[in-house]
Image 1 (cartoon, rainbow, N blue to C red):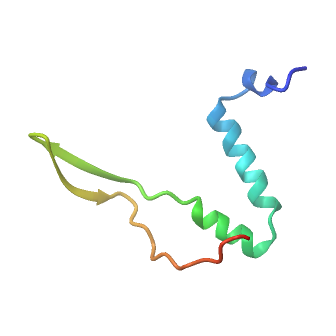
Image 2: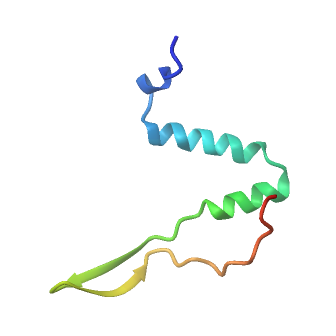
Amino acid sequence: MSSATWRQFFTYNKYTQIAARAVRQSLNESERVAAEKRGLTALRYQKWENGHGGDQVFLNPPEEEKPYKAAA
């Protein structure tokens, strides 16, 4: 078996998603919560006309970010 046998079962994106979830679950409570918050994505779009971008519109507005303690 090679180290890349996962390729025959799922894509690289799915592989990284599984690995990231495993790492987050292995953290203790406070670091896990901070890591999950960093993993949230704010999706937005912008309509362009005549080479100029319009206002950016959030599809899921981000919540207020609180400063978190960085890992040493």
